[in-house]
Image (tube, rainbow, N blue to C red):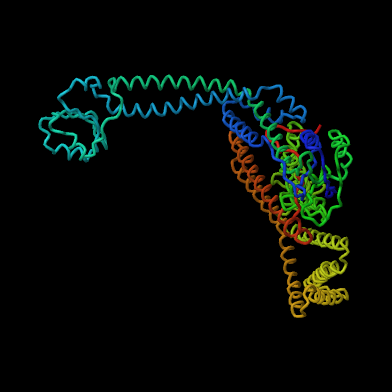
Length: 638
C-alpha cells in the first residue's frame, strides 16, 4: 500500500567476474541499472549481434512451425499453463537438448519445401506457355533439315496480325498454331530470298524462345510429370514438418533462454570499464540491501567496492515500484495506466480500489451478472494456471463481480427481474431519484477525500499556507455554497443559512485574494484569483459527472428488462423454449459485455478526471526488473 523505498548503489568489480556477477544479479531480479557518469568507455558485447540473429531465427521458426503443431484443447492448455523454470533449470534444459541440430534440420526441410514451391511456380508458367504451342508438330531437329526454307515461329498481337495478313505473302505458307484473345501464335515458311523476317519485325513479331528439342506437347507432359512429382515431395516434406513439430516446445524454451542471455549482454554494455575493472550504478529495494550484498559476495568475495548513496527524492530518475497486498494489487493497473506516482507522492491505489469497486458495481448492479462474473473468474483461478498478469486481471474481475452482486441485492435485480431480499432498498427503474441523490452524495465524498489528500500532501511538505489557500478556503466555499443553495430550494430559513451565506462570501473573497499569490503584480494577482474562483464551475461539472453512476445502471437495467420481455413474447410452448433460452443467453450476454465495458471506462474516467485532478500529478518512472518479459514460459525465482 505504498511506494517501495529504494537505494541507489555504485558497484565496482573485476571485469573477469562480470558474467558470473550478472548471473547472480539476474536471480536477484529487483535491480534497475543505470550508467555511471564516468569518463570511461562502455563495455562492448562480443556476441550481441549473433544472439539477436539467433533469436530472430528462432522466432521465425516458431511462427512457421505453429501451423504444423498439434494444438491442445483450450481447456487443457489453460489447465497446464506455461512451463515454469528457474534460471538453473532453464540452463540445464538447454544443455540437455541439441537445439542447433533441431533448428538446422527444420530449416533444411523448409528450404527444400520452398525450393519445390518456387520450382512449381516456374513449371506452371512454363506449362501454360507450352499449352499455347501444343499443336506445333515440329522440333529443332526438323528445322535444321530445311536448308533452303526460312522458318519463323512466334507470336504477334491480334491487331498487328490482321494487318500482316494483308501483306503480299506469295511464296509463303502460314500455319496458325493458337488463335488467342490478344495474341496469335503461328509458324510461317518462306523462301530465304524473300527476307520475310524484315516484314515480321515491322509488326512487332516475337520469336519463339521455348525449348524445341522435343515436340511442345511432349515437353509439356514432362513438365506436368515433374510438377506432380514436386507436389508429392512437398506433401512428404510437410509430413516431416508435422513430425518435427514436437520440438516446438524446445524451440520456445530456447528462444526465452537466448532472450535472457541477450538481456545480460545489453546490461553489460551499460558498464563502464578499465583494463581490469567494471563499474555500474542502479537501484534496488531498500529492504533487500543485505541480500544484494550477499549476492555480490558470492561471486566477488571481498574483491569489490559497493556504496549506497543518498538519493535526491525529487529526482525524476528514481524508479517507482508499488507494493500492495493481494486485495489491492489487481487495482495497481489502474494507477499505472494513468501514470505511476512520483517518489515524493503517495501510492493512490489504496484510494482508487474502494471507489472503483463501489462505482463499477453500481453501474451494473445486477445480482445475476455479478454471479456470472465471479463464478467464471473464480473457477478460472481455481482450475487453470495463469501468468502473474493474467491472474491479476482475473482476480480484478472476480472482485468487481462481488461489487456487482452487492449492488444487485440493493437494487433487487436478478437478470433484469425484480426480487425481494433483506438488502433490497429501492428499485431504480421505478424510482430513479434516490439513486441520483446517492450518486451525487458519493461524488461529494469522493471529491472531498481528494481535497483532503491534497491538504495532507501539502502539510507533509510543510506548505501550510498553500494547504489553507488551495484546500481550506475551497472546502469552506463548497460546503457553504452547497448548503446555501439547498436552503434556498427547500425553504430553510435559520441562522445557519445566514452563517453559510457570509462564510461563502468571505471564503470566495479569500480565494480571489490568494488564488494568484505567486504573481507580484496586484492586477495580475486579482485577475488570476478571479480565474481561480471560476474553478467552482468545474466542481459543479464534476458533481454532475457522478450522475453517470445512476445513468449506466439504469440503461443496463432497461436493456435486461427488454431482453426478458422479448423472451417472454415467444410463448410458453415446449418447442419454443430453445428460442427463449437463445434470446436470454445472447441478449444478457451482450448486455453484460456492454455493461462491463461501459462501467470500466466511465469508472476510470471518474477516478482519472474528477478524483486525480485534485491532488495527483504522477509522472513516475517504472522500476525495470532485471528480467525478460516471458512469452512462452514462466521464469520463477530460485
